[in-house]
Every structure is written in structure tokens, then in C-alpha cells.
Image (tube, rainbow, N blue to C red; front, side, top):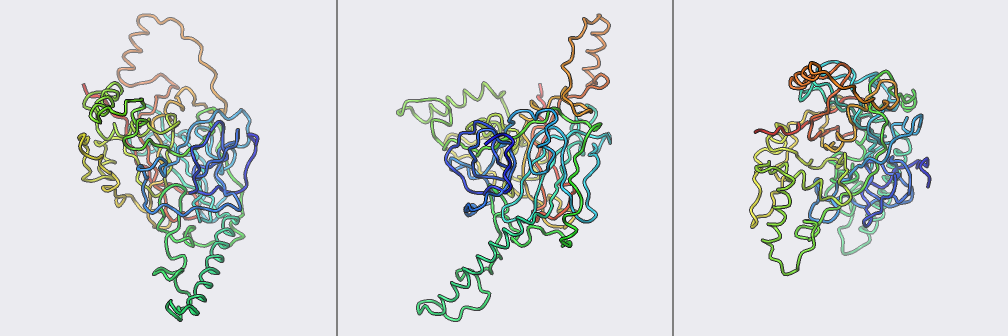
Length: 486
């Protein structure tokens, strides 16, 4: 399969295989859980026909007790070539570059520019993520922007996220086919129950599938690839107000363009499952130890190893964050974590966002005789505002992690759609120029036209669980980069 190959349907969102070999770009979207072993194909999420989808996991949280968690990791997979048109679609995932919005019905339209809530200037895109929901009827894409201007650091409104959901008739047909098949099976079961002397006779028409207490399609479907079952019924996956079918195909996709700022070149994303070492395994410490070595000695080695990476007195939640990112097999370069309607991975116990999402959660490290605290037991998203368009609940969908800052450097921002030329070496400074630059840097100021590195540690996006049709802003929670205190 070549790098220009595109599938026309989504991949199954729950199915997983054994540890895959991800040599090149895959034809996966960030909501796919099945590994596609193409050698050089660009990340995009679609459905593959004639493949069964596995049942969703029972709990809405990442399962770290097994080797494969419910999280899907997105990794940078090479730059988009100049003039490439394959990224001018909302059905592909990448970082940097310019976003593309699908045509949507009604008054909801794509923004002509996304502006910083502080300086009111256009800001560059961090990521476009195509992530249609399992058993949903819509194309669904998440977009995240951030301001890199020094005066806007660590301020509310400088990082923003939007979601675009557009009805996809292919997905609609798929959902209807599943519904018809489930109804056929239910009818057969009712017929069997009426003639089986060992079961309750005269099952009521329209009763639950297999005699359960819930009506057909009354239970929550798996609205996401990788994690938890979503509470919204399958029929409500497009919970937006109904629009005439004719109006759903009006319009053309719109791609933002220069002179808006953008990180160039954009970079494709590839995805892998999050493979974690089993608790207590030798892989957890990444060393080979003698089988007779005492557990206390192994724990002491691990502690000493991490002390080299983390300063003394480090936040235990931050240490857990670092361990999780570093321990994922082949996932050290991850820039994004996707796990719809699950529990996010927090960055700092001192952040207001952590205290909002994990109230009363203990933050100290457990002793060698204690099991690590399960933060999901303390998680709540009750404080997250509801969707402003349909009024339904917002749930966690994805998070961006600091490795993305190393990919999207300030020097890569341009306003002409081209990658900036390498800067020429600076001329030797005079003593007066050097002192002036030091004073400017000490004040946090930058020269004209310069941008600073972003200073966030964790960006969490919470989006509409009902996947209402349209384009609009979603809720973003940010944990800012920790500042060392002397």
C-alpha cells in the first residue's frame, strides 16, 4: 500500500491485535483500535467493511492492569511535503499546518480564523484529529490551537479547541443495518421463547434483547474506539437537531490558509496501542535482574533510576505522568493520547484542573507495601460545562502532552504556508547589544516577530458526548508547565 492510498471506510474501533510493527504511516485514525500494517500510508480514521467489531470494555477508564491499555497513542510520522493536497480534508490527522472543516448544515459555520482570547490575534493550529465515534452517524474532527506570544503565557483563553461533526450517510447506513440485524435476532429469540417450555412464554413485543431489562438499543453503545462505553444511545449519536437530508450535503470543505500563522511543515500522525509492562515485570524497570533478587532491591533500583531523571521532592502525580509516558512500548515520542469518555492522565497535583477533576485524591507516593492509588476512583467531570449547542454532557476525549512542544517550535511558524528558511548566523553583538538582549530576556520579552516556546504541560479536551452536528468550540483544560522553585 503506498503513502497516497486512502481507505473509504473507518476501521473497527475496539478490536486489537498482538504487538504490531509500526514501520511507517498507517491508515488509522485516532479513533481506531485495530492496527493496520501498511508500510507507508497516512493516518486517517475510517471503517473497514466486513470486519467484526469487538464489544466495548465494561468500564470507562484505561485498563492498566493488562498489557494493552484502552489508550491510543499518536506519534509524529514525518513532514507533509510542500504542495501536498492529501491533508486538505477533515478526515486525516496531523499536527501543525492548516485545518480543514467539513460542510455542515444550519447556522453553524467554520471559523475564518481562531483568535487568542487574550491578545485577540490569530493563533496557529496544534493538531487536527479525525475521530468518528463507534456506532455514530457523523464524521467527527477535533482541532486544537494555542497562542505562542510571550504576553499570553499561562492565561485562560490562549488555548482553544473546536469540534466539527457532519452527518455521513455511509455511517448512517451502517448503523441502520446493525439496528435491523439486532431487531431480527431479537425477533428470533422471542419466537424461540414462545415455543420453549423452559422459558417464559408470551414475551412482550418489542421486549429486550435476550430477555434483558433494557430495551433494544436502550443501552449505551461503544461511542469510542478505545475505552469506555458511552452513555448516549446509538440513535442519539447525532443528537443535534434534525436537518433535512438535502441540506446536509450543501457546501464544500473549507481549509484555513495564509496569511494566518501556522507551524510548517505539518507532520502526519501515526497511531499505536499503548502497551504497558505488567506490574512487577522486569520490563517495568527496563533492566534484567536476577530472579532471586528481593522485591525491595528492585524497588530501590527503580527509585534510584528515576531520581536521576526527576528532581528531589518532585510532585508524585508528575512522576506518575512521566513514568506512564516513558513506559509505553515504542511510545516515548507520543504527542497525543486518545481515550474517549475515559479518565485523563493528570500532570500535576498542584494544578487547579487536577483539583477540579480529582477532588480528595491522595497525591503522595505509596510505600513499597502499598498498591498505587487508582486515580479513577476519585475522578469526576461534573464541573465541566455542558455542550453549548445541544446541552448534553461533555466528556474527556484527548490530551496533548509536552513532546508536541519539541515538534512545533516557535521558529517553525510562518504566514505564507511555507516552512521558514533557516535563520542566518547572527553577527557578533556589541557589548551594548548583548546587555540589552539579556535585559529583554530577563523581562520575558522577545524581539519583534519572535514567538516563545509554549509552556503547557498537559492539554485536555472535553467534547460533546452526543456528537451534535455542527462546528463549535469545546472545553479545554490546561495544566501549565511546572515552575521550579529554588
